[in-house]
Image 1: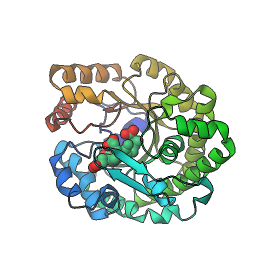
Image 2: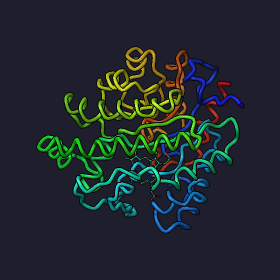
Image 3: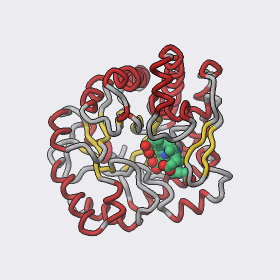
Image 4: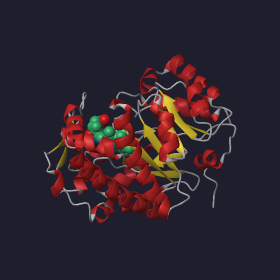
Amino acid sequence: MTERLFLSPFKGIVGKRPPWWMLRQAGRYLPEYWEVRNRAKGFLDLCFTPELASEVTLQPVRRFGMDAAIVFSDILVIPHALGQKVGFVQGEGPKLEPIAVDRLEARGVGERLNPVYETIRRVREGLPAETALIGFAGSPWTVATYMIEGGSSREHAKVKHHALSDPLSFARLIDRIVTSTVDYLRRQADAGVDALQLFESWAGVLSEPMFRQWVIEPTRRIVDGIRATHPKMPIIGFPRAAGAMIAIYAEETGVDAINLDQMVPLGWASAAMPTKVLQGNLDPLVLVTGGQTLDDEVKRILDAMAERPFVFNLGHGVVPETPPENVARVAELLKARG
Ligand code: CP3
């Protein structure tokens, strides 16, 4: 099989340049995304139509030649498959209907997401042999925040109150998300992904005890669950904005790699997590700004990580305002290194 550069850091190999891809590399900043998006009835319909979802997955790779594609789907397909109504309102983000935790049915969730595995198989056929494919899911705490808050939230007051005042009910919710996510990710692995990423976008809002209980423990269970059937599958964790807890998360969940947000000092991350692959760190707004600022930041990150296993990426997702030519510039800067 062709060597996939994306996988070399996971084997401890440090080459002339690191592999790269970008969080949310498929999406609204690309005109060709809108062309396909407008053919679907809605965002979830796009995620569940393999013909369209695979096309959207391939678009950024075709244009920019990243070393990895990430399957086009969303972390909120799990609440949807658990039976909660999920809608995406243009300009407002996701809207989820209120739920009774004990009415959620975790069994059968894996099958209900069959279109995602079909997308994976189609993308694999359409990708160059040297390009890796990444599967993903939300981590339980982050998925639960959307399920309880009913959408995006700043303070997370409702979900924190639920976890603090009725920990048994909250544990049952987290348990259902863990079980269905393990099932979902194993099936993604069987469909042919090269690595899996767990998105904990709201890792940064919890006290240490709550972080241990609701971020580390459930994530560790997912990692163990995947390893039980797919012992070699590289797993990337993304505990966004979790500060000093990031290194504890890395150690205790057992993930192979950590996606760093743009707030993490690279010297600290390298020293605190010497055995982990690191990924990320470019501020998505620097990618919007472009010019010399972008060139300087890319250089700073590449130089800081030149001697250790690293995957070049962003500290959070590409935003819709991003000029595509700035992504092309990053590709050029990386290519110039070898
Ligand atoms: O290219 C890729 O990265 C693959 C697809 C992907 C999407 N969402 C597509 C998407 C991935 C990996 C995600 C992850 C995701 N989804 C996260 C974790 C990463 C993060 O950003 O913190 C979260 C929290 C979600 C939930 C979600 N989905 C929100 C809050 C929103 C609306 C606001 C926003 O950021 O756009 C979505 C919608 C969504 N997911 C879009 C895309 C391309 C935009 C939908 C559209 O086309 O209208």
